[in-house]
Every structure is written in C-alpha cells, then in structure tokens.
Length: 222
Image 1 (cartoon, helix red, strand yellow):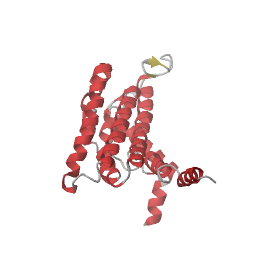
Image 2 (cartoon, helix red, strand yellow):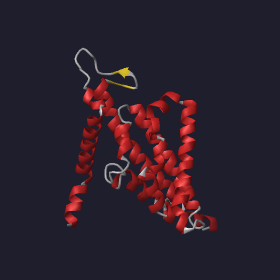
Image 3 (cartoon, helix red, strand yellow):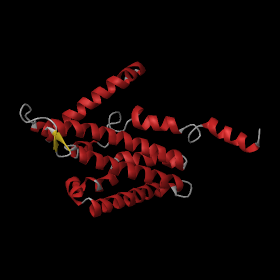
Image 4 (cartoon, helix red, strand yellow):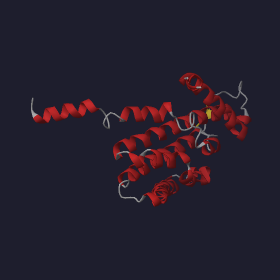
C-alpha cells in the first residue's frame, strides 16, 4: 500500500477531529443541551420566542458568535496569558456580536428593532463565554468550532420549538400567515405573553428530560 494511502486510512480511522467531532457534536446538541439540560441562556429564550422568526434569527446569531469566538479563542489559546484570558475572550465575543448586530441593522432593520438589545446581550450570554472558557481554551480549533456549532444549534433548536408553539397558539399562524381558521380557533394571548414563555420552556425541559432520561441518570448516581 502506498504511503499516501496509509496516511489516508490512518486519518479515516481517527474520525472527525481525531475522533472527538461526533461526540462533541452530539453532546452540544443533545446530551448537554445548553438550554434544556444546563438551563443556560434562558433570558433570551424567554424574551424573543413570541415569534418563530425572532427565534430563528436569535439562534442564527448565537451560532455565528459561538463558532467564531470558539475558533479564535482556540487559535490564540497558546499565546494568551492566563491572567487576561477572560478579557481576551470577551473582546473576541464582542467583536462577533457587533459584526452580526451591524449586519442585522443594515439588511434586516425591522428584525433588529424587534430583537432590541438581546443580540447585543449575547456578549454576556453564559453559553458563549462558557464554551470559550471550558472547551475552546483547551482544544484545537476545528473541534472547538464543532463544539460552538453544536451548542449554537442546540440553543437555536430549543428557541425554534418554543417560538413555533408560542406563535401558533398565540396568533393562530406562523410568519404572518394564518394557519388555524378564525372560524373555529380563538388565539390564546397567554402564549405570547411572558407567562407563556415560562410555561412553554418548562414543558419543553420536562419532555426533553423524559426522552433523554436525564432525571433517571441523575437519580442513579445518588
């Protein structure tokens, strides 16, 4: 077998990101989902999910920021002094947040007004800072990007599900289109108000735990 073929086989055997890619992706999306399991970033999850469109844009913002910040934190991990690492992480995160916010204001002004300060507040989102500090700071760039993508997707999926049900139940439609006939359906305004967000998130976390068996695993460890 040629040397190039042997090297290719060795790389294939290691898998994505030296075998860590698939596990890292599954963890971020499912096993340690930042919202449903770790209950992080719930302020934005409660505030912007009255419409599905808002939820999708907010999810896209967090994916962009987590992937970009994880990449640069990982690239600079060996040259960043430990005593100023958190300052460097916040600066990197803020850069990506500002880029997304400015693009949103330039090309999607109405959505920017609806989301208000919540895009800017991603700078202080514990999901982004947590992944940079706990993962990107001690892992290679590629797998750090996978981790950022996975956690961003996990966050976005939860927001999309909550936004879908809140808008559908609260208005009878999605994306401005009426889906449930007004002849037989009366919109439930509670769904689009603050209490509806708490109720929807609570049900989602309970269903997630029932499916994933998180409560059973925690009980077995006691």
